[in-house]
Length: 297
Figure 1: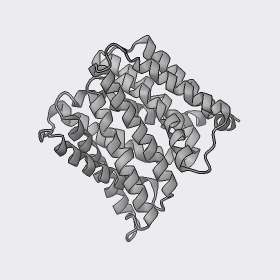
Figure 2 (figure 1 turned 180 degrees about the vertical axis):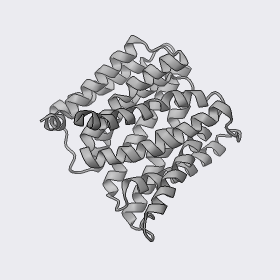
Figure 3 (figure 1 turned 120 degrees about the vertical axis):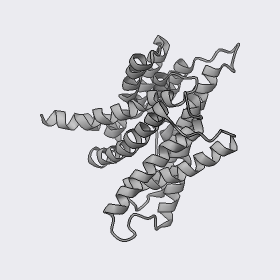
Figure 4 (figure 1 turned 135 degrees about the vertical axis):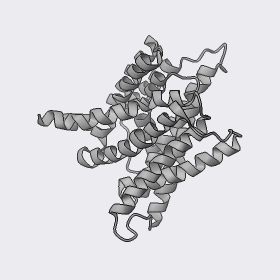
């Protein structure tokens, strides 16, 4: 029973995040992609900041230090607004494939950390893991040299841009070392990211659209469950189990997203995409082998 209680939060988080990918695909049928992303974080920011404001005393729910402002700005611009590229990419990429590409986030994070975190080091085996991880992504993307501008390939590359920005955002927040709590930081970052996405939507000339029917349900699910509830749960797991164990949930998310896409949206996932996911995971194991060994011990 204790094992079930330990595993249940990870399964719940993987399910919440995994179902977000088909929810994005559903909402994109009726909403412009960047505006859709902005709506998601509008809803989540209102919920998270509302909860923290009610629970906080005085001004403790507000950023106050330079580190806080740096983390909120970095989180909003990269971690949150960067997800606009995911919505753009999923216009042509199946939800399961989009989720598989997310497996590159921990590997890309290490590359950014090498640049911005002096204490970060990678061994020779870890370097091999990074190369293996990118080889896995190449299997998923499978560019055709004779036709490099297909909508499917462009969509996958847009999702790779999102992965790069999200990984950078995590490193910026870690380097800033903010004083505010994780949930509060997430709420303010989503508020900043939402504003950036609305500005980008206007700049791209997306028509102002009010979500209705299924699109409204998709926005509600993404904003409430896949973002506000999921991030609250994520930070609780991070505090209890640490970064390495919590990051493993990223490799359960594609399983949920793929199954949901096949069952709910009649999507097809190729053998090459599944093989690419396996290769990405092997790269992660090589890169984080010491931390995983300690975790298993």
